[in-house]
Image (tube, rainbow, N blue to C red):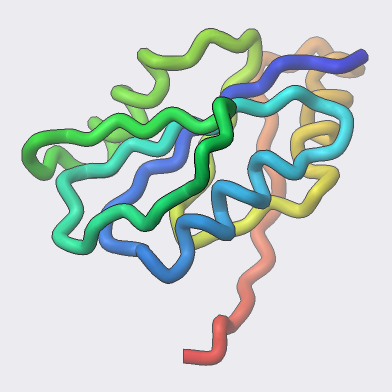
Length: 122
């Protein structure tokens, strides 16, 4: 089963990380992914994310916080499944498929995965 998944990324002042977060969301195995980046009026400009039609960027004109950014992104979603990713985090390439399989197998309305903390060297 190939599913459509929208990934909402709330972005505020993480220019060094957001492109990798977007790429990790787009590079999911076995699913069709669209990424919605919500820029919460960052001081640092959002770096170029390429011209991939699977990426949509929405910018808040003033800072509203991560909850509002998640809600803005959620309102732009059109897929049957939605996932949230922080702008400074990465998805393993099998994350979406594993969680989707779990949802289907158990008829769950919500799934989530464990976190693995890593040091970026800074």
